[in-house]
Length: 168
Image 1 (cartoon, rainbow, N blue to C red):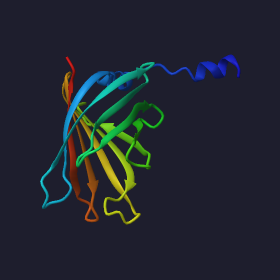
Image 2: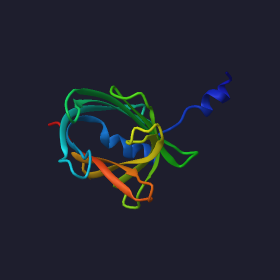
Image 3: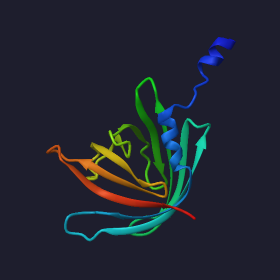
């Protein structure tokens, strides 16, 4: 590789990368999942630690109780791709085989990051479905992750919400 090629690969953090750095730290979360309209929400709790990878990426490793029992481990990566002008990332978890790939944008307020993805339908029929994870900044010590699925009618249905609070 030439020196010119080496320099072209040396990305510098931009404002969008800096925005992600607010997630760096240790967090506790409390969440609830909605398993159906006639069922009460299932609660879960856990922790996550987020670190920065050279200011370009954040990597979050989480551990928590799964709704209904059992332990779940997960890893989320988030970064920003200036060529796509989109936030990009991935999510994997110990209870599933699908790797969720994210692409999304922040709203005009800069407080809500909408991450679009596709994954297995909740119907268990082998079909794929469209999902969104929404990250809402409440303060420097509190953010909310919510997940929703797009129905056949085009309407979004929220099925999970988790509040993350910075450990003191």
